[in-house]
Amino acid sequence: MEEPTTEKKSEFNEQQFKMLRLHQIQNGANEAQINRDFPKWFDCLTSLYKELIGKLTADEKDVCVKIIQRVSIRLENFNSAAECYNGLYNQNTDGTFRNLKSELFAFDCKLRELSDKHGFSGRDESEEMF
Image (cartoon, rainbow, N blue to C red; front, side, top):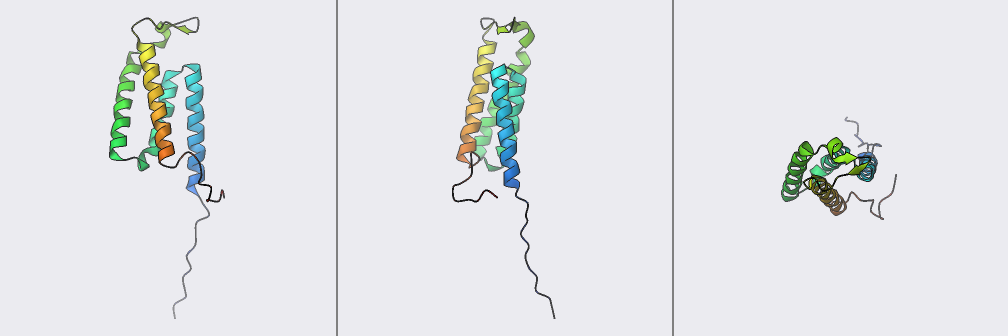
């Protein structure tokens, strides 16, 4: 006679840790944006992209990859030490600062939009927290 098997549900909920990671990444991105730390801002945004990638459509991934490629090139050409004097960026050099800041801001907004669209912005009111 076989013993009945009972299914056990896992007590571990990855969603809570994912939301914590997203929160920490977004805080890092906000801090880097305020401090004009463009490499850190970009690193935070690419980390956010990696957290979202599993839910993105092929078209959304293509858009993000193109932005990542453009920003990578701009970052390689951006010399923050040469363009920074007494904490103020020389925004008249060749527009690199302005272009890089605009690209990063657009990428940030796009990722936050995708995060909201795919349900990563917060829990559903009908769901229990724990």
